[in-house]
Length: 337
Image 1: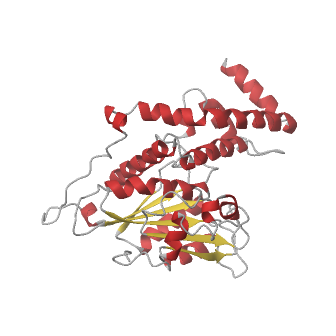
Image 2 (image 1 turned 180 degrees about the vertical axis):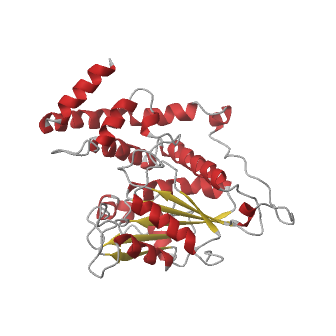
């Protein structure tokens, strides 16, 4: 059976028209069935789900006053990076993204970076962890050459998960799953301690569709953590609904050559300025939302926000992004208004 599947995939790989037709069928099927995985995950949780209350991972009490407190207790800032729709798993960062997080933490030693959250799975499972479709996803991941890149399937699949985060019917379950995964990985990176006198600083950095998932998770993160939450969209595509009422600050950076990030401001009415009562516009009018040009970035690739090509001024594109984010007013003791 596996041999037959591989033969079919090899046939499709060399025929762009067939690939387009199959992609269209898959797009339709995923549009119908994509919420199923989220619902199954939701129902598979504890009995608390019947009351739509799910507990976050267990958090440690404060280490204040304990002279034997581990070094991790000095951490009061978590930087969570949520990648774009082209990713195969949460730990598949590009060299530029890894460089960015390493340098960012180096500039802010009170912070730790969490880079292994997959924003396109409510259970935080990579595509390789899907039991039946894992061979297909691995094929798509490596079939990036030819007239049509095989990873278009991954992007289509992840776009539907992005859409679930927005959905008024299933979004609450998906976004709660992402908030749960974020806290779990935060705890794994450096145990979270509860200290009412010193709120945690949680900085969610999302690029492309990851920005929407970051905003979607903000409601439950705010409910479960004593934290100041900042969302930084780096060329993100997002609506103006979820997360804007809960986040303390939201920043949106956009490149001058990025035509993709414009989509959010065009297709989501909640982003239109004349809808003054939308959460987006309320945050904007209250001074909790701001946007700025990041530089000559494209949406992705070597000239993207985390690209390693050199721009006209001789700096790498990722360094330009890093400098811009380091200039944001989120690294002081408090971001509260």
